[in-house]
Image 1 (tube, rainbow over the protein chains, first blue to last red):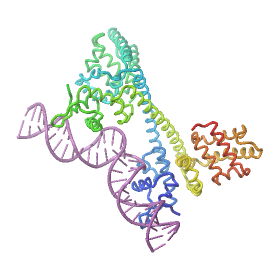
Image 2 (cartoon, protein in one colour; image 1 turned 45 degrees about the horizontal axis):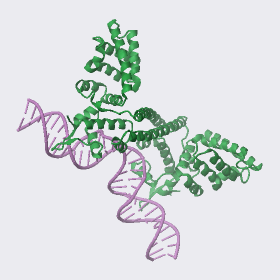
Image 3 (cartoon, rainbow over the protein chains, first blue to last red; image 1 turned 90 degrees about the vertical axis):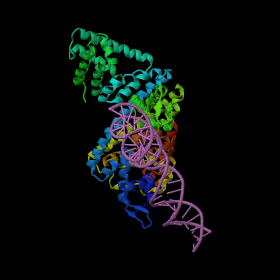
Image 4 (cartoon, rainbow over the protein chains, first blue to last red; image 1 turned 135 degrees about the horizontal axis):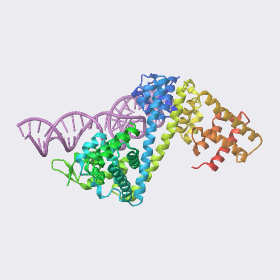
Length: 249
Length: 249
DNA sequence: GTTGACTTTGACGTTACGTCAACTTCTACG
DNA sequence: CGTAGAAGTTGACGTAACGTCAAAGTCAAC
C-alpha cells in the first residue's frame, strides 16, 4: 500500500509543497520514487510524518525535529524540555512587552509628548559612559534610557524625588560614619534597589555596574556628593555588598 | 551639528547597517548626503530614530512604525492597541503550546509509545470525512486527530467511557421521545460539550460541523445508533440548538 | 605616502514553507 | 486515439529585519 504525494498531504492535513520541503531536508524521504520522478509514500512514512507534524505543532524547529525523529524517546524528552524552557522564556518576554506597550499606550493617550526635545540629555557624556557601559552591556543601558525618555514629566519628577530622598539618606548615613555593609546603609540600598526595579528587576552585573558608574560618571557622582562629599563611593560599595548578598548570576 | 553614521549608531545603541536599512525603507533619511556618498544625521534624525527604536522594542513591525512615526499620537495609540491585541493572542497561544508540550513530555517520559502503529485508524474513511471537514476546516480536525493519537491507551479508554455514557443517555432520551431542545437533552448536550472541551473549547462552526458529521459519517453514527436507531439525528439537532443558544459566531 | 578607521554599494543567509512558472505525466472521456 | 484537466516535477523568488562578509573608495593622522 502506498500513496501519492497529494494523497499523503490530504491524509495528514498538510500540503505537497511541505512534503517536498521535508524531502529536501532529508526529514521525510519517499519510500519509492517512480521512473517518472513521482514520489510515493508507505505506511512507515505516514507514521513518521505524524510525529514530525505533532512536534512541529508544538513549536519545535525542523532541525530539532530531524535530530529527534530518528532517536528514541530519550532524545525526544530532552528536546521537549529544552523547548519548554524556551517557550517559557518567550512567554515571559511577551508578558514584559505587553506591560511596556500598555504603559506607552496610556502615555500616548494622555497626550504626553512622547520623547520630547530633550532627547539630548545624556548624549554629551559619551566619554565616561562608553567605558562603563562596555562592562555591563550597552543594550541594557540604551533600553533603560529609552524607557526613561518615554516617561511623562510628572513621572520623571516623582522618580527623581524618590531618588533624592534616597540620596539624602545615603549622605546622612555617610556623615554618621556608617559602613557600606551596615544594616542601616543596606536598608537604604534596598530602597534604592526597589526604586530601580520599576523598569524590571535589575540583573546583578547591571546593578554592580551601575554602582561603578555612580563613581565614574561625574553626572551621577554629583547626584550623591552634593549632599556630602564621598557619598557616591559609599553608595557604590553598598551596592556591591547588596548585590553579593541578595542577587544571583 | 551633525553626526556620521557610526556616531549615530553608537549614540542610539544600534548599528550602521540598521541605519542604512532604515534608509532603504525610507524610515529614516539622512539630513544630508555628502558628495562622497557619506550619510550625515542631525538632531531631528536622532529624535526620529529614538521613536523608531522605542516602537521596535515594543515589538512593532517596521511597516507599522513607518505609518506611525509621521502621524500624530492618534495613529500611535491605534497602532499600539492593535499590537497589544496581537501580543495578547500570542501569549495565549504560547500558553496553550506550553501546556501541550508539558503533556507530550510527560507521555514521552512515561515511556508511552507516542503515536503507535494504529496511525491508520481514521485513515480509511476519507470519503465522508472529506465532505464534512471541508465545511469547518480540515486543520482543526487534523490537529485534534494528532492530539488524540498522542494520548495513552488509558486516557483514550477513559475518554471513550465518558463518551459511551453520554451516548447511552442520549439514546435513552431519544427512546423517551424527548425533543432536541428539551431541558433534559440540552443538559446531556452540555456534558457532551464539556467532554469535547478537553482539547480546548470548541468553536461554534466546529461544534455544529461535528454534529453533522455524526450523521454523515457511519463510523460516528454507529456510536450513537447502536444504543437506539435515530439517536445520531437527535444528537445533531441537539448540538445545533446548543450552539445557537450558547456559542457565538 | 602609508596606515588604519570609516564609508559606500552589493549580495547572500536566516525560517518554513507559499506562490508562481514552465514543463511533463497520468487519467478519463468522446 | 486525441485531448482536456488534474496532478506531478524542478526551479526560483519572497517573506522580517537585519548580520555578515566582500570589494573598493574616502578621510585623518603620522
